[in-house]
Amino acid sequence: MSVKTHIDRRAFVGGSLLAMLSDGFARAQGFAGLGGESEGFAAVVPGRALEFPRDHGPHPDYRIEWWYLTANLNDASGAQWGAQWTLFRQAMAPGAQQDGWANQQIWMGHAAITSATTHRYAEKFARGGVGQAGAEAVPFHAWIDSWEMRGLDAFSAQNVAPIAVSASGADFSYALNLTADRPLVLQGDGGYSRKSERGQASYYFSQPYFSASGTIVLGDKQVAVTGRAWMDREWSSQPLASDQTGWDWVSLHLDSGEKVMLFRLRQKDGGHYFAGNWIDGSGHSVPLATTAITMTPTGSTDIDGRKLPTSWSVAISERGLKIDSVPLNAKSWMGTRFAYWEGPISFKGSHTGIGYLEMTGY
Image 1 (cartoon, rainbow, N blue to C red):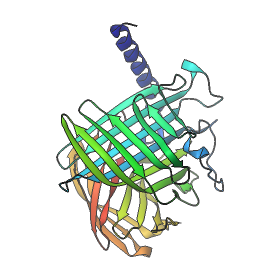
Image 2: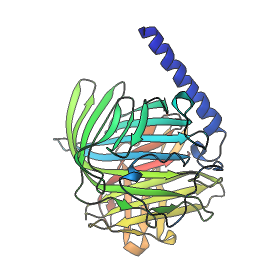
Image 3: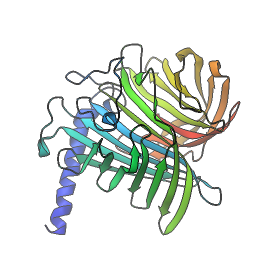
Image 4: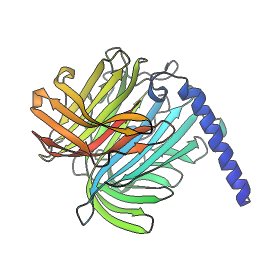
């Protein structure tokens, strides 16, 4: 195959994927079509027991899922960094999985590196069925082109560790090794994460106890980093209600050793649906009452014609938590096909620590 033929074919594939995404996602409801109809896909129901290693792999009967990692890192000088790695699978139609180019799965990857002065990101698309992207439970491996998240020797299905994660863009790359000494935790009620009072939900688990080490490369500069990381796994067929426009999500590493996951789903009528879990130092996860959670924007940043709430006041009345967060880099805009804000934060108040903030639908 000539170089020109290879480039032309990849351009054709990329253009075809974007056309399909525009037809499927853009005309559906909610952010990235996640509030669209789910007829023909498997339903998320309470009481389903999650199983490992099975649920580290793909769930093609459901419309969408993702493997999502964020890392709060420091270099030898103490400077802060952030790294993101995400693989999305989207089914364009329900039914038995077809072979080769007839496969109905679309894969999308996002990667980013953030510091106080720079935010760099990359995006990839792939069609299922041809080996360019995918996920496997045993041995654990999720990939799109050369980006990958894979289990290492002595991989524990309960800990989702150790794993190696790598990605690269036009002007950056990173490679991290992650270990964890505690098992993964189930979000929501035993892994059933409610997204509205009208039945929308996902299956959701996390590994919030990763220790990370590795390297970041920016141009010709290589930086050794260490820190903490958080992995989310989530799948659903309709994670948003049709009138929900997006979400504000935070993962918090408290200096006390506890972890917190919170999200606010925004509705067109101005109402919000709150949910979250409090995870103690041993990994025990407890759902938080919706009425106990307050997330209030306290500062905004203008980005790409949008005003984004990049500073927040967060309170959980039943846990005595009241904190104020600020971003490492307020310009952490992911200008991808479905653009959103994603970046590391720090916070202080009743508790101190670091974490990540994601905001969609603005």
